[in-house]
Amino acid sequence: MRTKIVAGNWKMNKNLDEAMELAVELQEHQSDFPSDVQVIIAPPAIYLANLEMIDEPCYQLSAQNCSHHDYGAFTGEISPAQLRHMGIKYCILGHSERRQYFHETDELIASKVDACLRNEISPIFCCGEMLEERKANTHFVTVLHQLEKALFHLDKKDMSKVIVAYEPVWAIGTGVTASSNEAQEMHAFIRETLRNHFGVEVAEQVKILYGGSVNAGNSAELFSNPDVDGGLVGGASLKARDFISIIKSAAMPSQIED
Ligand code: PEP
Image (cartoon, rainbow, N blue to C red):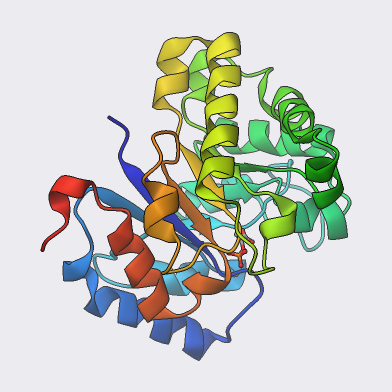
């Protein structure tokens, strides 16, 4: 049985005081968190060190991006080796905003996946189709292509360290969420694709998160699907109360109190 993950992508939001306030608020409510839900936060990189200083944090930290190089003359880049040295265990890669605004290609994302894995950082690999692709019914082809290009070169051991996040681009930050059926259908497709390429053991192990306008009102239904192993949450992770509700909604049914 795969346990659930709820990851918050803060993107380029909050000043340092606000970031610390949100982290402290999460800390104060950590006794409400279901014990079987893993919480990950991806703050702006400049706050990673501050958030790491919090005593016994209720979350693990993720970067939102990193370079495909470990060190060198790459002004402004974030090194996966430096992230690792700080104890960061996760890094979001292939987010649609990076694909769209920073022109990241599948090839570059594949090399970032490699850079993370050689530095013992688990990629949270994002994939998902544009609205036109969904409308043209080519969404499975798009996602298959993204998986093939960025992940199919990995061996089974490395693949089992990857977290996949299915994030339909038309649902990110729009308030329009994939229906529960649409999410489950794509997650089952992704798992089947992983099964065909990497075998059943890896496919059953890899966690597949849903992202795209997840909120406190829709998370429970989305997360109740057998192939949805939690969520990657943008906007709703910026408010403690909403994010905590989403975390609570990811509990296994046996953990939910009346
Ligand atoms: C995201 O950017 O990863 C995301 C899912 O954003 P939102 O929840 O705001 O749609």
